[in-house]
Length: 551
Image 1: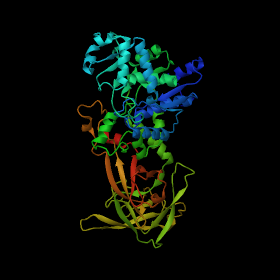
Image 2: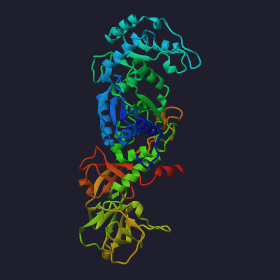
Image 3: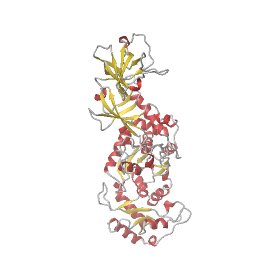
Image 4: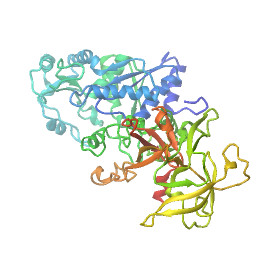
């Protein structure tokens, strides 16, 4: 968060709170439920919560909302921590709602003792009917009039496991006529006889999110509890719990969640894609998960930049996926190592090259003055792209054709003399002569050409596989589209291409980012190994998708 930028509305609130002396220091929290992997939507909340504490000299807790044992796993806990660290953030304390189960249970008992909570035997369907409608008040039932003593006994028995799942719930006793449906005696506890990933079988009753959330914030003394807009109606219940328990007065504030084109951010739907095999895993590079983006080659800097650019607002909007790609592309252009890779090869034979081979130098990144250069082997026979040769060149064609001259990148100027076809009439070889005085960096030939081609020495070329990824969905608003969201999956979201690459890729660091010249930005996949190199396309050199949609 830059000092020069105007403050967003949450920053303005915090500035006023600190200036007034309301707080000496702020404390925010990031509270994921460990029931899936983090995605780009979470990144916005992460950057906001940690960004606020960094900007104002406070801190941020990482608190796992682990109150639903049937969907939560340690695998998700570890993946969330890894994603946060990769994004560049550190938390003050690692907390779990399950850390507070004893305290939360005590809070519930306090509410019962105050006559503000009761045990209800109604079924979920009956409770839904009893709550009424937005235009009609709810109706109470006989359980609502149970005595404090009876409620305490029943709640104790719930904790002791004497009742089956769903047999009873603990509800707050608030107001069945309240315009806010969430205040019409909401459920605070339910019975779930399921093994918890941290507490095992110690508990068989678990607090609902709306009860655990505000109380956990108060226990940790969170000053600013930042939520997305759908939690606006929940704020009244958040405040009700804190007020009636007389605990630390944490405050909730809401901002618009991230909606992004060509993407779904529902963990339930993302899990469905994984379980049904539409993608390989949670970290499939086509997924909008942080781990998928990391595997694809996105950088934490580009994701933080994206979150900073979209800003914080009070109104829902939808962000174009191209903005995320722009942020990735802009950062990679500065740091990516340039390498030459040929995907559709045709052999180039330099008829007058008699040296056998030599080692040339090619710059790693023209955007980085300290990027240095790498050794690139050059020989008599090279691979070039088939699309860089034309038998009968069109007007303004500046690549290779009979009689035309081009420069081979970081090497020499060559002139096409002839070509050779196979029995099917397909060009297999192109014969050229080179100009010895035209070597890059020491060119004294005086010849000027308009075209430059990338190439790979055939003798030294390394086989690689390129995973070329595209958008996972074909429509902008996947959530708003009719029918099953899976009907809009892009069948062309992954294309595997065999290619020849320069040998530097064998010894390059595993975490290096690359620009394969004229092809895009690539990153070595986790399945890659020496002798079987695999690279994921992170993003194209230009916004190819936008161009395609205009056709």
